Image: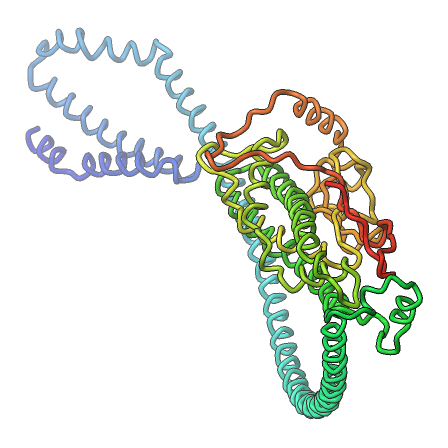
Length: 509
């Protein structure tokens, strides 16, 4: 009996059963149903061998105790265990549940294997499509390389053709430069010819001037002929062969050049000086509309101040020249000629102060309290100079009257980039229109938007309210100015003076 126990304890059946059981537990979910059933059968076979050996040992042990030895143990433990195994259906139920679980697991494994096969098929299909796409990409790459080679060859031929064209253009440029140099030489000869003609005319005019000075000195000498009241002698003096027709003054000779130069300068002020003043004011005012309104009102006020200063300066010059004027030209022409020659006598700073004073009380514009309109005094000074010089032309240049909310005119204004093209009324003006009589010399600029009439009414109602003026310096005074446009010399009435010449009537001021 002891040998049997030793063999049982030393046998590898128990260890093999334990190892197989642990391996089966690890690989149960990986194995298939048949594999799991085979392993279970093997375990049952090993268990049956162990149970046979144990029953043999039980039989030998019961015999060793005699006839009645071990009866109580068999009755109390072995027989009840056998009864429960054969009578109770627990073992059958447990075996049935185990079979059912194994079937469910087999079914789940089959489903997993089928899904795995489907995914494998999908992956194989995707791999095949990827291979096809790879072939297409390789084919496209080869075609692109072929096209690149063709493009290289074409660019090489184009480069050769371009070099030929460059050489041709250089030759054309040399010929054009030679032609331009010939034209410059011809124009230079023409200019020299004109200069010689002008010098001849100047010599003739200087000779005539010396003759006139001699005649003037003779006329100032005491003579009974000068004080004779006889109308016959006066008529004979007026019909003297030494008296020639009136010669043009320097202002009349340079009128066209001054006209074009002033228009060009006004255009430069619009294109450059206005933008510089606008950028300077944008540092203190964020509202672009208010900045443009300030610049427009400064331009209008500069024209008004320059015209007023021109009238006063003209009256002073006429008063100074009228006692001693005996020249062949009229007094008005002599006054204009004097003003043209002495434009630097214009006190532009007083006009700038007047413009700033007028802007300080204008209700349509505002400015931060920490700065002043003197910030744009250089812009105002330049506009005043140009406006003053425009009054010396034969037909003075002036700006038109403009009011917010007026009907937009394509012939007078240009719309800004942010305007509404369908709006018929002007919201506010950016630059005035330059006029010569009734002819538009330079268009202005305006902003058109919907609701411009309502904004104009609001601005007019605001202007009727009390004005909040700035504190002025002790030396500044507000001058009342007339807003009527400056009269044109071509339209003023003329009258004959005693010497038979035409003279412009003095304007009432």
